[in-house]
Length: 316
Image (cartoon, rainbow, N blue to C red):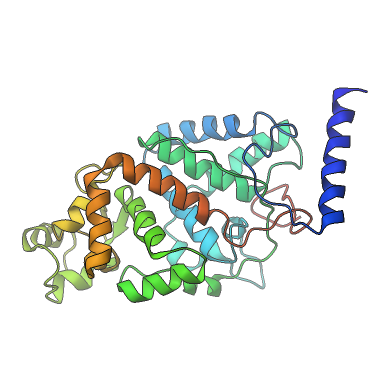
């Protein structure tokens, strides 16, 4: 039997077994090993090209993956364009400053040319997020794949995304509702070690007398964010393009940018975890990889659910 025929037969047998046992298909590392062996390498190459042109776009891809997973699960719905009768997630106010959609579209075009109708947009986004982290100095980790793409994207659904002004209790409840723990929440917040933020996300802390913000840092931020402005600043002012654990050390110095960052030390238990992550770069890297893989499995579509979009911007 030819190799291609053997692969098809194997896939059929696996699917038949799953059907017979009532088991649902699960995400797995190496999902495309046979159907599109070069998929992950191709994604990595295109992400590297994009980062050479725009060194900050990796932070956008990471944030995009997070926003995708928290709204309708990790189904690539954030990538869909708005239509005449519907405003999609990508055009919601919380996502209008996101860049990198063109990067995903380029990767999809390459993958369609290599393996037509095989690799989902949701998986592309998960791979691209991982490759961005590695580019910034993070430790490589394996990404389970096999997600399928959703067909619905509604801007109003993004209201669930955490605001930078939320407190610890609200953040914890939100993450638990998505199957993540408070520890996952604290660890995933470490993604704020890269990227930028608009002044309106934290200006309330500058001009309303926030006692939890270091006054010297507040004075500096006021020079970058005068009243009424909406400039951007680096979320990590010292190593903005390095995926390190400095974020946690800044929190301990009351130099976190968002209320939702500084609130992570508002209880003894959460402060202890922040200190542990601040003390050990290796611990942070390991825990972050574990937590983002867990996040990447939120409400995924698998098996015959959803579709494999031919174009990430539109449903088939």
